[in-house]
Image (tube, rainbow over all chains, first blue to last red):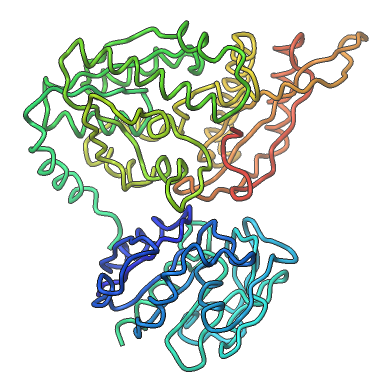
Length: 188
Length: 318
């Protein structure tokens, strides 16, 4: 099992690597301009968060990831800026958040699906975002917080997942289980 | 499988063999990371490892003595270099936190280069851990703060860098320490930043301000450690005082006072990449406040408690 982590510049990219390692999943952190051939044989892909302002048109800074998403047909999980990038790639919108969230927030699961299978309906997660997804055509809403609707989504037809919060940080409850659920999807 | 310390130590011992061709110098601060790095690397280098402790004049109360004692417990022979005049001199008139960090990082390297020359070292060993290079930023990653062991390194350095703990976080370093037989009073010490008290004095660093924050840090440490021992609270992951050179009005013995503010910070964390402020009982905060304002009546007449998590704040203030 090998999951490639595309580093969009998050403080917590290395935490994603650590979480996957703890799950006995081989992983490697790669730059956002990595060619498809380098990730072609991976079983899954994680797009990390980052300082890139997807809500201000800065996705052009990591534009090579668009081609990567087109070519990579296996499961993809986007976190924070990574989730926003996935939304943009599939015709959605991202804008500066009405109320940004830094630190803890309460997540309510709307649809457990694969990502939240076996988890409680409400729990605490940590976020650190300036922007948020405002429209995601073709995606199903999985979870929200009091201040932000699109906290977690899944594509209706493809194995594409995203969370605005960061399940990889130590303070997020059930974070490792969320990654374990994603790894399960990669194993299918 | 969670982090396996014994596998890590075995792997590093094997990796380290390729460096057996030269002498190495390591800067040991007495903290967890550099002490563990020294004990780990010493397995391969033996007597070819030269440990240096730099007294920057920015250390905590009694730190030089504690560090010396801890080095002995870990079987490390450490040379003490007093560079306090150089550090305080270099920081004169500087208020910007990033400038402060860079100046300190460069001064550290200058001292190490001198020590390396003296022992003809080829390698520089550092106890750099993951948050150090992550927060220092590069490429796509924003610079949050330049850690002294990353941001201060000159582009062309005459020494080859060995950083065995680069991919670890503090909780994992402590597991490695245990595996190596480092005593728990050494590896369970709270983190202390490389730039020392310089970044716990907001703005310009002067000897007077460092002395104030050193005393305040000592009081915070004593009170929280006593409270934890008495089972009134869990010991926080990190706890200290910060000097805010903002003055406010007070009244002391019927006399008008106009002094500095001390902020008390205590956080709980696993790896320091996220943190929540600790729920310190009011009676403990009360005691800390009284002790600080009584002991430093001429300097400090107000104490506040920091109730911010990381993010949005960082653990240290600069």
